[in-house]
Length: 469
Image (cartoon, rainbow, N blue to C red; front, side, top):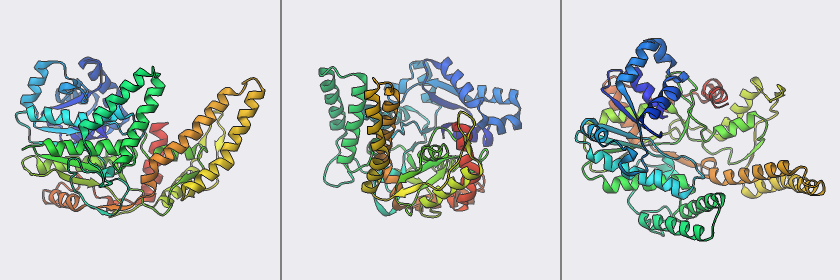
């Protein structure tokens, strides 16, 4: 989404004064090189390249975009050059923070540093900018946890939890992380053991307070930090649901990294996934990446000269106005890969024979795995032992795949048993505001215009196949 945002700004507003882009790199030269190779030279910029010409695009990028080596989890956002920092403090007026670790199964310490401490560091940096008009923070709609009904665009209160029976003390959470580290070091834990322990700690703390995974838990804490420490700074939070490939801009189907639904559809297309755990009649709330970007830019326009005492929230979603049912998504995958079958490494066509089979209860899901896979694993284990571990790699790989499938099932549960709808009262007001200034077509983020079958068959799925593999 980050590079889609940069592309959109340069395409529709090439006279922007300057874009400062924080990029993880060893130094500023490496940041510039990475931006050029991974962003400007990517297919995403073909529309601008064809419109402007390669040479002119390069001159615009050199003049308008300044990639900077940094890391939001560190002091001063990892920007080491003090002169550059002072220059940024004098020039920057709008800050957009979309940096995050979106891994549902992330280590608690890493998620805390990026999604919580990182948000605090960005806020502190924003307060040092003399011309700053607003800080826009990209969160997730799933800070709501596993719930039902109409979910309002309401900001989170510092310390509140979803289970209502506990208080969330962020200093205590950081202390728990530090204590766990000391304990593991005292035990001479390996790097792998440390990773496993920190992942488990994140899940335990998240579920204690009512969230389903470490990602949504730490994103919620990040929002709380911003609201609690905002003072007189204008803060806007965009909460997208599951971000998918672009709907139209700069062309349909561009995807930046594997998203939540992509791991399922790619595994299905390769013939490796024939069933799933979830309610086929629940909603799968997805929103194309370019619509999220348009929401961000519309919010910047609407709020750059305003001040709100409270944090302003905008959902970027589809479940209320244009709901997608999981069974329909499974059907679209079946239709696509029936018409466009994948080929394996040997060039042999992989045929999908039916849509993925749903299991609506964990009991039936585990029973299916036990019957069809665990028994096979036990047989492979026996064969491996009697053949002097000749099939050790096969056994370890199969065991790992089964364990990963069960763990992913647990982590994705809130998204495949989702019965809520994200309200868009604020988002609708924002759409009307854009219409009043004739920007509604340039910044379209209305999910009601999406025809899901056409979108998945002709944009998202072919985009996933092309750009992710």
